Length: 248
Image: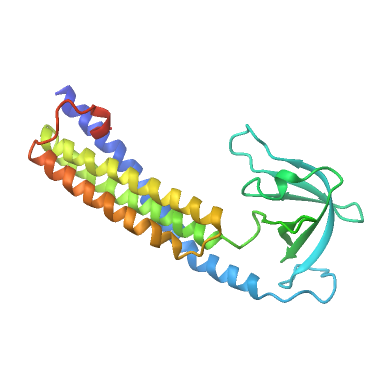
């Protein structure tokens, strides 16, 4: 009785995670067209003929002096940020999605060039020619949203199948183990999508590299999932296998 109740609670927890993941994936998928359009607009934007006095769709390169750069290392959830000063002394606060390659090298008094678009600093360039997008920058967001969509949907859908399977098969050891196999392979699918996104971003590969790399890995994981599910239903899985591999 207690075991069946625990199985139900586990299945419910996985179903909750599945719904959250699928919802997050749907939200990110909805953002992809807008992110693509914004990046295309940025890449096609002309240079400003003069200093824009209001937020403008042209690109203006403005020299700044670094007042302070804080990487927030050791502070979970806090993004790297920098305080930049205009020649007039006005301060601009800029945040970055990661520390490299520019903000990690910033020192007070350094000169950098900020690219201003629609009234925001979207990119910072140092004197060595290195460039780094800020959080306001549009470049890379389509790939980020696409990779997040793959991760959330692949994990969420398999967790949903595995959770429902376990919920309706409570008390059946073989089906319970098969359901656990599905769920944990879903974790692998999601993790593979995230790792693929990291590799794409680190190497500045085009967006099509994400499905090109993740697709074959996903097929291998799905083939493994089917094979292990069949083995679980036939009761061919070794009972000495650590429970953490097949159960939540």
